[in-house]
Amino acid sequence: QVELVESGGGLVQAGDSLRLSCTSSGRDFASTVMGWFRQAPGKGREFVAAIGWKDDGARYADSVKGRFTIFRDNAKNMLYLQMANMKPEDTALYFCAARTKGLGLVVAARQSYDYWGQGTQVTVSA
Image (cartoon, rainbow, N blue to C red; front, side, top):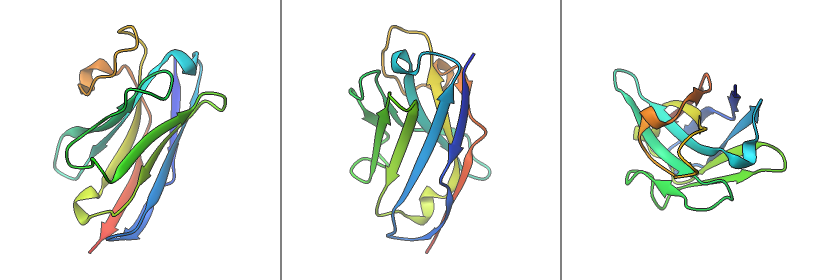
């Protein structure tokens, strides 16, 4: 069992930066692939970024590549998403997700993640 709690969301202006955090508990965090997903109103949940056990092998959606950075601190059981040069289309509910199976492979498929947080809202005004 894994419990994930996101924080750090808020209202920002286009071009601003924001950092999301995710606290994990209940399982060996250092052996769990972690990811960020987001869901805008009226749309499906989409992949944003994911990272391997050792803070390596990061993958990003094309829409955020070069602007967002995913990283983790295994000593603190924390996952982060640093967002820069934000755009109104980044407005969404952002979810932290854990992938406890699959031998550490970093993937983008939503169905590959088996634990989810409740989400934190990010709103970017033009």
